Length: 319
Ligand SMILES: [Zn+2]
Image (cartoon, rainbow, N blue to C red; front, side, top):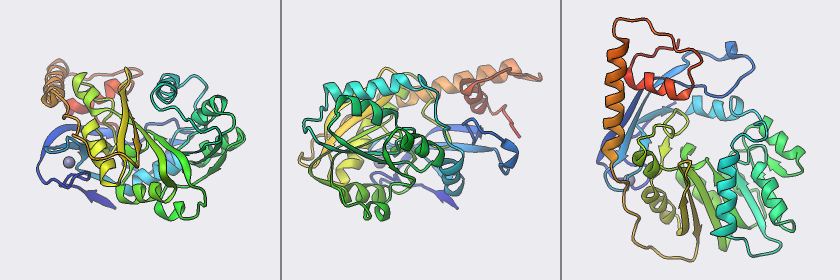
């Protein structure tokens, strides 16, 4: 099922600008036991637009069926300890210093808990809190359950949230919102499980950081959205969540906490230098095309950075 978006999925604005195109980009990016069982194609052309109003970057079209299959079956195997530690440390630092949990027996819910690494760290900080979570990937959900957490192998949908009887004091998700197809369903699910003093904390790759640093790291097949602070705050406000604290980490992630009791404030300014991302990548693409012209080139052990450069320069063909 192919979804084509020409209006902004956050603010419904109809005027958008081309932001970035990645040609023949790899669809499957996580380690897998046996790739021979995965049907072709293994690559896809990605095209990102940016909303002229709320500065939200989004894929012009994506294949929902492929993505849902990735999340259920081809996603992160439980990560070795130490992998992703910087991201986790940044998130825990944000909670401790900017958005502390003041209730001793708080009910805490994670959307997309992976193997339960953050749950474990929060448990050591808040030993009297109650924890639960959802994680659609079976293998990682089992890993989190083995660590003693109550984890349902589910996507966080309104339908699922209606089966929960708890109202949570803190609902958080890290690197989930940029994958969401249906914002209305996601936020209705949060409404179902919150009360009027709950806080919601979202972490996602920062478009402000990406444009500032001319980085394409946040742009890949699974990220149907790349949020600016302006677009994330706009989206949350639409569903009655108001920005409290925010941080953009040195690794390029945006973390924002929201409450139900705030009010509409001035929206954050759009990212500066949006054209910098395009012009730098156009320059790189031209250089690579010149270097590789009429040559056969092998990139030995090329990581995602090199693959992205090749996708920008349209020289890359995986299949
Ligand atoms: Zn918009």
